[in-house]
Amino acid sequence: MLSTGLPQGAVPKLERPGPLRDRVYEALLELITTRALQPGQHLVESELAGHLGVSRQPVREALQRLNTEGWVDLRPAQGAFVHEPTEEEADQLLTVRTLLEAEAARLAASNADGAGVEALEEILAEGLKAVDADDVDAAVALNARFHAKIMELAGNAVLAELAAQVDRRVRWYYTPVARQRGGQSWVEHRELIAAVAAHDEQLATRLMREHTEHTRRSYHARAKS
Image 1: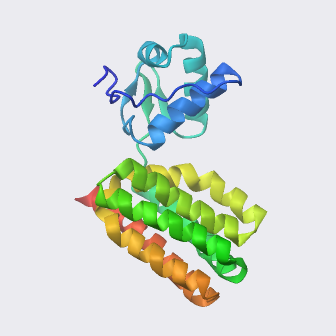
Image 2: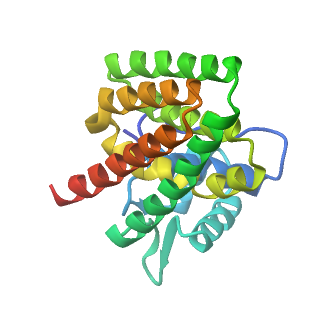
């Protein structure tokens, strides 16, 4: 483990081109959403700069931006810390997610063609492999891909834009319950694919609402355990 608590290999390479502060921001945000940097963890500018191979200035700018967006708390005389979401924050965001995803499922059932259903089935197969291998990081990433594909098949740009605004926080909240949800989450995905393939809008809506509600309840159960 590195001194900031980052696992070896967890630090993403900074993509080029683009302003350095933006690349540092994206790298830190990825570390937070994947929980390589844990909620409540102290973020030391000099250490983060060393891990990312940059000076402290772009790290400081990135932390200020992350603070503005609610990912990082800047505490006077203490420094920067990864934000610890409250139960109310998580509940509100996951409730909004349910509304967006349920509508996306309805539209996907209305619009999806054979190629779209096949793409969902391919993600499903990869997700089941990740669960069997107990690869939580891969399962989380594939879960995000599955829901993004449903949103794409929905064909509503405004809905997709709204969903994108909450997507990273959904990943943040989903990561600690991914192992607990495990195979059951992908069983629910399989049922949803069947509803989309059958163009059953009502069933797809209900299944997605139940699916996202299961995740919301799992998150709260984890917090109470």
